[in-house]
Structures are given as C-alpha cells and as structure tokens.
Image 1 (cartoon, rainbow, N blue to C red):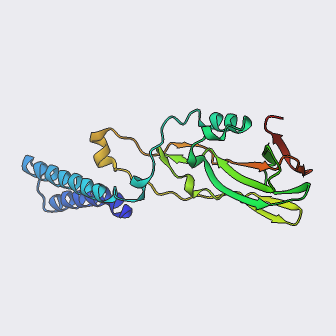
Image 2 (cartoon, rainbow, N blue to C red; image 1 turned 120 degrees about the vertical axis):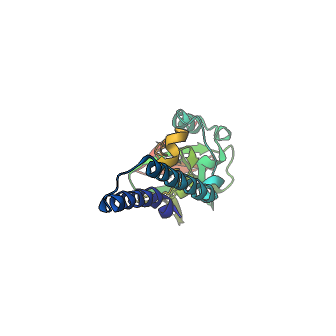
Image 3 (cartoon, rainbow, N blue to C red; image 1 turned 60 degrees about the horizontal axis):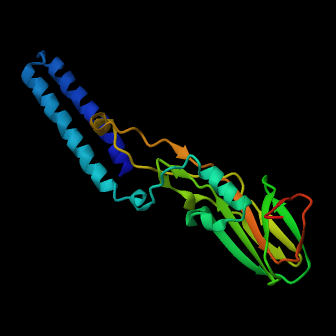
Length: 225
C-alpha cells in the first residue's frame, strides 16, 4: 500500500506527459480546453491520493502513543535514576525486568558491550532477591513512540556471576506513512523525519542490603550512598 501511494504522483506525471506528447505528435496545440482536462486529471490524482492515505492511516502507527515534550526526557530519566525515584518514570521507559533468587554474600558482575555503567540501589533488608531492570529514553519518530523496537539488555545468572549482556549495534527499520506532495502542498504538513531519543539502555539493579558486588569492568553508581 505504501508503494502505491508513492507511485501515484509518478503515474500521474507519466500520464500527463503521454497526453502532451500525443497531442504534439498529432500536430495540435494545447488549447485552453486541453488545459482544463489536464487540471481535471491532476485533481483526480489528488483525490485518489487522499483516498489511499485515509485507508493506510489504519496502519500500526495510529495505535502508537503520541509523545510530546521530549526535549528534557533524557535528563529527567537520568536524574530519576540517580536519585532512585523510579516512580517518576513512565512505564514506557522500563523495557525489561527480571528477578533472581540469590543468597550469597558476594556477586560478580560480567559485562558484554560498550556501556559499563550500572545503577545500584540497596534494599532495606536482605530479601535474597536481585531485581535487574533496563531503562531507556526511548525512540520517538515524528512524535510516535517506537520504543518497543529496541532490543533490551539481557541478564544471565550463573552460580555467583551475573552477566549483563548489551545487544550489538541495532539497526531498526521503521516505516511511517505520510501524505505525498500532492496533498502536503495544500495542507502544509512536512515529512515525518524528526527523531528523538537515542535508544540508550541503562541497567538498574536492586540488591539485598548486605550483598557486595565485584566487577572490575563495571562502573557502579550507588544510589543514596
């Protein structure tokens, strides 16, 4: 359907060119009447474009959340994590959460990937559970939230080691339907090409009160310590 919308203006141009060439080949001049016909054909393609757009608008993008005021989102997320105020974050910022049972006194942290920062919050008691969470500032295209396309950090607990595995460089393909020039020239709308959020992943651990973390390759940022 997207291809059809894209091809409509091209097809219209080709048809108009064929009409002009045909008339020139017959040795006729383009009169006012012919100009009227060309205008009618052009308007017809405008109406067809509007029809196709109205159908395609039922696509997945209409079910996505429209997100506004993103300029300060990055700072808000990191400030909330630094202060341990997770309740200030929106649900869309949390993209993964796992809980592990663990009763030992020490835990080794292994990191795969480029980001070695880990926010750590100690609980008020030793409950024998490690909560591993992944937060992100998201991926917003044209004001629509595509955060669900982001691959989160994976966690694996083996004996006394918790592996924090960041995904490799992600290539995210997103298709956004927009009105073509034939419609935008009247509505004044611009192409959807603005992207907000760098899809950065942040690891946040909530650990038992007495648990000690060891990780020479990790940069632990302890909350309220």
